[in-house]
Structure formats: C-alpha cells, structure tokens
Image (cartoon, rainbow, N blue to C red; front, side):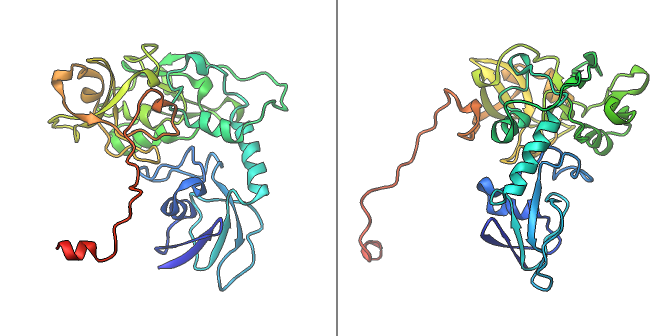
Amino acid sequence: MIKVTIDNVTVETEEGTTILQAARKIGGKIIPPAMCYYSKLKGSGGKCRTCLVKVSQSSTKDPRPMPKLVASCSTPVQDGMVVQNLTSPEVIEARKGIVEFLLINHPLDCPVCDQAGECDLQDLSFGFGMAETATEEERREFPVIDIGDYIKLHMNRCILCYRCVYVADQLTDKRLHGVLYRGDVTEISTFISKGIENDFSGNMIDVCPVGALTDKTFRFKSRVWFLKPMNVHRDCPKCSGKAVAWMFGNEIYRITARKDKYGEVEDFICNECRFDKKNPADWVIEGPRHIIRQSVISANHYEKEEKPSVIKPIEGTMEKQK
C-alpha cells in the first residue's frame, strides 16, 4: 500500500492505482470530473481532459512537481505523491477552458434534449462553465440520423468521448460504427449508413455522457424528474436481468441499466430487457431506487431522514443490559 495526498487529504491505495481512482476512495468534491473515463471499459480515458490535476510533488523519492497538469484518469500514483484538484487555481482555470472547448459545438438544446436532468455536461457547465464564449466561428452541424431500430444519433451534441465505440468493441461480436474523418469534421457514425443491430447496442445510450445517443422508444415522452426510478429484475438468459424501470404511475416509460454513484453501469443489459419489456408484469419490482440529493431527478422524490438521537446512552448501560 502506498500513500497519496489529494487536496490535503491522505489516502492509502494499491500500487498501480490512478489518481482518479484514489480520489474516488476519498469521495466527495475531491473526485475530479470525468467525461470519457469509464472503469468498466478498457482503454477509456485521456480524451476529454476534464480530469486534469496538478501534481505538486511526484513522490517521496522525487519531490519535484510535474511540469504540466496531468490527466488523473491515466496517471498512476506514487508513494508520497501530493495532488491538487480544487485547491489549485491553475486547475480551475484549465477546467473552465476545457468546458468552454467542449461547448464550442454543443447546441443549447437542453430544453428539448432527453438527456436533460441526467447529463454530465450540464453538471460540468454549472460548475465550471462561462457565461460567454470567446469564439465567433459558426458551429459544426450534422443531421440527426437513425443508427438502428432503437437508437437516434445527435452528432451535434457529441463530445467524442469514444465510450460508445468501446462498448461496441468489448460487448459485441461486430462493431459497425466508429470515428470517421479528422479535425473539426470528426464524427461518430456508421460507414455507408449501416444500421447497428446487436443484442447489447442499447448500452451505448447508457454510457453516453451527453444526449448524443438517445432511446427512440423514450424520445420526447417525459422529463426524467417526472418519473420514479424503480429497481427491477427478471430472469433473462442473455444478461443479468437487473435494471431500472422509470415509471409514471403504473406505466413503464423506459428501462435503463443500473448505475453506481459514479454514473457508471453496474451490469450491462440486453436490448430485449431494455426495449421490449415495458409491461410491469414482465418485471419483479424491488422498490424505489436511491437518488442522490444533488441530482435534479430528486425533485419531488423524498426519502425519510434518520435523525440522530439527541439522548446519548450512558457508558456501561448496554453492558448492564446484556
């Protein structure tokens, strides 16, 4: 085990752990934001640059600082390393510039985007976005296309995080889409307009951090904060069958995979569970899903708070009762 200090908080972690993974062990605001890194997908990370941090001390053996900001998702920790995230003005300014860069071509269509309310780019813009941009050039525009029976691609919203490409590479037998061209005309698409048809293609929607890939069966039906996410499961021969049913009353509007506290999918689900099973009778409903209070989805969803007792037990009372 080695020790690393992030924003004046020291944590012990295994050798080979990245700075981002070490920060996740601490938790809270110390965790750098990540738009492209996905722990479940091999090779992800290092593309969006939103997780940049400052290493003010490389290690105990080499106390020199690293000359430039580094991507925390791909930089391994060393014993005695000292990292600055929110405590560094340089990191804050760099992150503001990165958010501005991500928003250069991103349209302001949050009011009509199905991802609104659970969009990582919205959260990032709220924390580090600028009121005005320094660019005057026209934004690139792409037509909205169907890349399968269930998925619609809004390339105007894409930030080229590559997550959907990694999902297709690692979960399916044959990938039919990828990154085309270079420079400011780079896009995610299928070559010669082929359709994506495989049992796990719907997971591309779950891993997309913005509204570039949306569910055609849920398109424009409701806002996520009007729905109640319920943990459900079923016996499925293709996947784990563990999912989240977004319900309005007794009606299921959409099915998604379960995500952890970092917004990453716990178990990838098949298209049959996701798109074909919209009847509540198809599922075993476990109960309401826990919602992070900071999320806009928590609006009108209340949980009973367990207030600590104001009466402290007298020392030795429990032992006497035993």
